Amino acid sequence: MAHVLVHMACHEGVATSETIARMLNTNPVVVRRTIAGLRDRGYVASEKGPRGGWRLTRRLEELTLLDVHRALETASVFTIGPSDDHAACPVENLANQAITGALDQASAALEAALGQVRLSDILAEGQALRAAMDHSRSQHQCPNAVAAQ
Amino acid sequence: MAHVLVHMACHEGVATSETIARMLNTNPVVVRRTIAGLRDRGYVASEKGPRGGWRLTRRLEELTLLDVHRALETASVFTIGPSDDHAACPVENLANQAITGALDQASAALEAALGQVRLSDILAEGQALRAAMDHSRSQHQCPNAVAAQ
DNA sequence: ATTAATCGTAACTTTGACTATTACGATTCA
DNA sequence: TGAATCGTAATAGTCAAAGTTACGATTAAT
Image 1 (cartoon, rainbow over the protein chains, first blue to last red):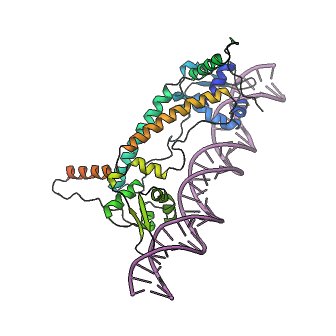
Image 2 (image 1 turned 180 degrees about the vertical axis):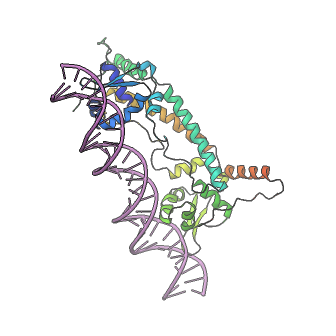
Image 3 (image 1 turned 180 degrees about the horizontal axis):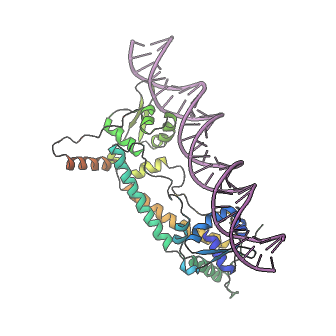
């Protein structure tokens, strides 16, 4: 989804759910369901009717991967976690505390890392790469969108 | 599973897959499948036949939550990750790099945290709690096992 | 030896969460 | 008015994890 937002910023226009669905190899309803999290936080807005669609309401500099992650997060980021099979067992409770503590630390590290990446950084890195690899071209445009098949 | 290992150490005996399954509200085959990871690393050993079962081959001081985690790990600990929908898209690749970097940092934090918890620490904390809460009892035994229903 | 208890593991079934699809209403532009 | 688009509920499909069955190998007790 971060990928999509960067493309949206580059193309300067509205992107329909249909278009985004093709980018992500999925379908428009899934896109609407997912992007609703971003809409609810005010990062994107939708317009109905012909020529409607989604547009960014913030600049890429004002969005981090953490913002995107939080907006889309529905369940735990971890596939492991404490058990509650025997809430009365003191051994289980102590083990759970230890595990939860470790997961909390990992979660904090993840959020810190995601928070340091602005979406604009992603583009900037690509432009830097491009500049380094191709000195003959002075234009640092946005890379083309994925072809909608 | 960490919970189970602590109980095994306390009871000083072998635990059958059947017994462990009751502890975890599951069934013996799932237990054997899961505990195989610990067996392959030499943390537990099994004995067949009557009076057989599983026993720890290390002391709790010699096992950390990280050891247990690595032994049981089958897939990524994260529910999120990079996409490979469009490997040729430079924007997707850059976004993936950023995301992977953040996950790597979180993963490192998780392993560091898990590595600092020895299974014996879990018991020790329980004993400390018990001692603090009940001065009249000088015995610091292992808390009772979960009742097999 | 025979029997019963136990692990090892392959094969199959069930479950549950996630994804995809369908359907239809609301809105908006031409 | 009609077509394009979002919003969302309801349903269906998918897939990996968990559960189950089955059966062989091993071992202790008698």
